[in-house]
Image (cartoon, rainbow, N blue to C red; front, side):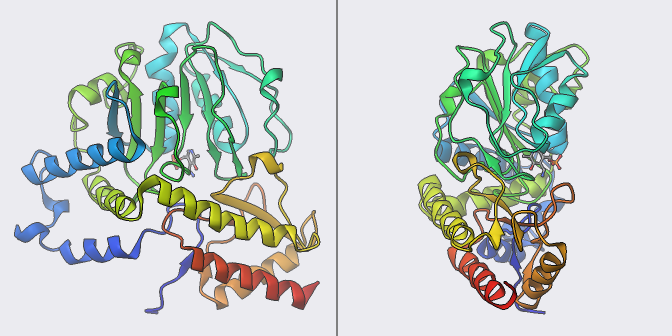
Length: 365
Ligand code: PMP
């Protein structure tokens, strides 16, 4: 159908229409070259410009200080879990991890292959809370402290940047990068896959403080060695050129739409109206996450009471599809519904979802 879908998927996710149209117009002939960007050398002057522009835009939008390098690697978020450990664990052989959900749990597991991992608080049976920082057992000797800023599956987002007393902080921002302002200088390393807020799958953005480079473990594959990737300006080998090319356009789109402040404002509005609907539903809808760490980006909720009614949830998804709303099914490990509200999802899209929720409740409660 030519009607464009209302895509609430967790990733790969909705991209700005404007960007896709622009990509379409250049697909066969990039800037009158007679060939697609996909067909060009990663060492061409065209790609070099895109590579530089994407890095410059990230630096500008996130206000990245001069002593940080911006890299593009491959291997997805899962690859970055291993890369982080192999680049930084060598310092003392041990690292601290805060496990608040699915992705930080996987990251900790990956890191165990490369050193000793200390969980700063016990893993909860059910995610949905971040224990108070005063109860954490931080190791002052840790090579780094790791956490996931936004747990995509569980809907848990950190409301603050932890205080680690000087231990470098590494964070996974795969699902909330470019959705709110934050102080880059508080971090040793930030990474995020492109496929949610900033582009198609393929590239992973890494922002790393220079003094943490040069310490990778000997076994670290060259493509994951941040120092080597940085030396070669992210064209050490063939990068995912198409992903970086589209990402550069999404970054331009963010800049045109009032930058990170604009994205943050929209994100507050979008998640605000959805959480309000849940709160006003008299527990017909419910979100299992503590209020202080509810994600603005990925919002899991149950239908038909706090335990969820699977039949009603199935009906809800069917009704959603009738209204062109897709990819609302919760992650298989959590169940229920999950609405992902990335940058390209508009407030108007969310209003349509909220209307469905209100009408569905009247019909089925
Ligand atoms: N971290 C987070 C927060 C994610 O949401 C995801 C993917 N959904 C990953 C890591 C893993 O990314 P990938 O599938 O690219 O390995």
